[in-house]
Amino acid sequence: MKKAMLASATLLVAFLLSLPVIGQGEKQEAKWAMPAADGAALWAHMTNESPYLGWGIWPGQIVPVRGKSPHGEWIRVLANPIALKALREGKDVLPDGAIIMKENYNGEKQLVALTPMYKVTGFNPEGGDWFWVKYTPDGTVLGEGKMKGCIDCHTKVKTKKDWIFHTYKE
Image 1 (spheres, one colour):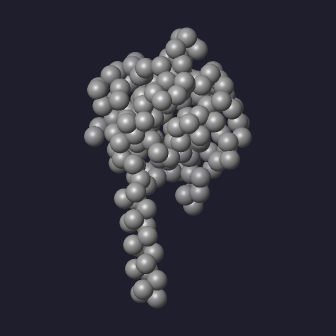
Image 2: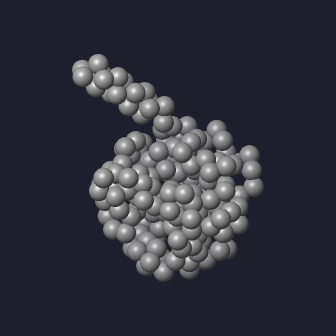
C-alpha cells in the first residue's frame, strides 16, 4: 500500500513539475495568424496551433483554486504568449491576440467548461474588444461573441485591468 501511495505521489509531482509556468509560453509567440472572432476557429487555434495546455499558468494556480459563479467551484487560469508578454511588461491594456483561458471545474474538480476571453481589435469596442466563448470540455460551443453575462460581469473591472479580474503578480 505504501509503495502504491509513494508511486502515485511521485507521478503527481512529476506531472506538476512538467506543467509550464507563467512566462515559459512566450517563446511560442506569433508563429501563426490569429483566428477570427469565431468559436470554432478559436477552438481549433487553442487545441492545434497553440494548445492552451502549453500556455503559462496564472501565478498561484498550478492546481485549481476556489472559483465563483458562473465559472464553477474551482478554476484555473492560463494565458497565451501574447497575453503573458503584455502582462509581464505591466501593460494595462492587452494587445490584439491576447487570450485568457479559464478552466471551470465542479466541486469534484472535474473539468466542466472552458471560458476564454480573446482580444480582437475592432470586434466590440464597447466591450473592451473582448470576444467571449463558453465551451464544453470537448470543444462544443455553448455561447460566443458579445455575451451579455460576460460583459455585464467584467464591466466591474474594465477600468482597472482591461476587463480582467485576476491580478497578475509573479
